[in-house]
Length: 292
Image (cartoon, rainbow, N blue to C red):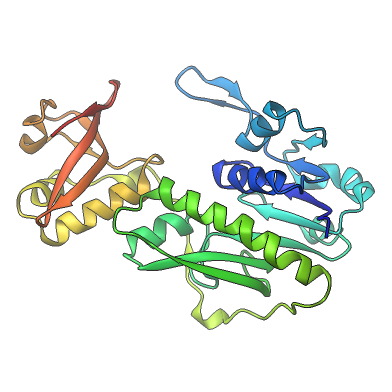
């Protein structure tokens, strides 16, 4: 079955899914992504990754970049898609928009709903020390990650998984699940099932302030180990590259040639005999340095 859909999504998670669907011979009828934004140290105007992929591959479907999806409601109505596919779009989609497709608007969420609804499901799975997570396809409704479930797929979280590795695996599994499940849903062979809302947990975007670790906690992780080391390892794996775990320089970090009382990002590390071993550090304003 040929998938006739509009794809909504902007960042890396969405880009990987879009790449896989295009590779499988199912390009969308249109791409809806965020407007180009200033990014990086020099604030260069940068397109969303999904748009960059489409342009690099010279794909011919239209690309819409509204501030709000209601701005392009007429264009979306004219496309007459069987379904909309929403993956990390990060904008509220009203009923006037998600009700346009012939069948449904389908959300792709990187958790086993109803667990870890919201903005940071991948980070939260690592922070919680979960042994597994997964992906869910669900029918959009007017509440966040709330609609009936079409299908789920679980996968283990490995001890060394960080945000990037887990995001990649979840995105690849999402694309595979889409290709397996959506044709069955469209043909009426899958009936979406209501979520158990009493079991729902909700995540929020993690701020830079919340990624700060007290120097005493870092010292304990690097010297005493135990829970402090386990907590720091999870934080580093979950919160890098964004917003990035940071602290103020301690004698233990000074031993790695990092100055005392300077802001330091802990970009990578690992556990050895219960002790956290920093591997990649960055003093504010400087380039990352491999240590150890």
